[in-house]
Length: 413
Image 1 (cartoon, rainbow, N blue to C red):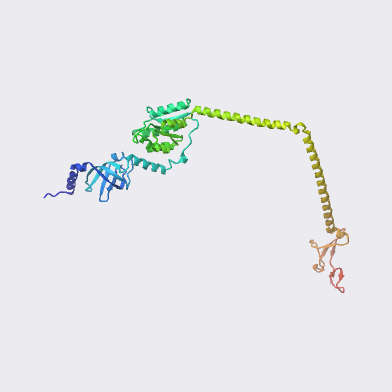
Image 2 (image 1 turned 90 degrees about the vertical axis):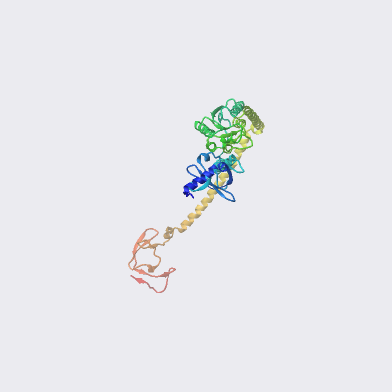
């Protein structure tokens, strides 16, 4: 019996796997779990169902071709080769092809990217801007050889021969298309020679229209400072460019109709406005003339002095009322002044002094009201009706109402 090393046994088993025609090209249905995209670009995950699990790896060269993002819980059909990973001694599926089960790869990629960009607010209605009313220059981003550019030019020139069209030629399908379309939008924004941009192409399959679902194109449209009209030639389905654009047109011809006004319709509209203005002006002048005729026919304009005569009479009456009111006011104020003067005279202390009374004050100016409030030998000031006296207290006697209280009593100083 031969004794083999672990490596030899593993290599032998790997050779058996690789020689099996069924395992060399197999399609496996399962649910993705433990999905991980390594920094190298390789994708590692597990396929599982209710019975078993199978490790799987998809190398970067294949993974970068995926249009959707694999994630846990997604049911897929994986195609590739089953072989042995020698280091771990485990068999695994080396995936070359990964297809979402029950939904197309492009449909899944569309839904995933739409949800992502919608969450960032790129499709919000509040971000959309109105188109210019009468643009002088229109930028066109499309193929220079397709039917779309011919339709846009034909419709635009028919509606407004004076409009200027600037074409930035790009590919509208294929791997180079998204980068060219995004770059063209950036160029038109930087040059600032246009007032609105039309981005689009003619109809086609979802694969042919896929450039307008590319994330770089959608972001370029959303970031454009100029209004953008999406004109991809399909009527029932939407591309992500339609959601990001300020306006969506079902066809390139309709885009030209949205962007370029019909000068004949504008001329008709201006003529209608001018006719309405003239009619309104005539009606206004006629109305003013009727009012003027009525005024000229009135008696006021025949004899205007009557109006002034009545006003003069009114003024005389008002002046008479004003004079009477002023006279009443003056008389009232004079009476009030006389009463106040009499009260003031009665309360004037000088008048009291003139009748023989006097005021006695201390040197500090305090009025003496009681005999017992002075001290022996204290000097006082006596204010008379005419002049004043400086005196010294030598005797004090208490009195009530000018009458002596009893026998002569008091204090001798």
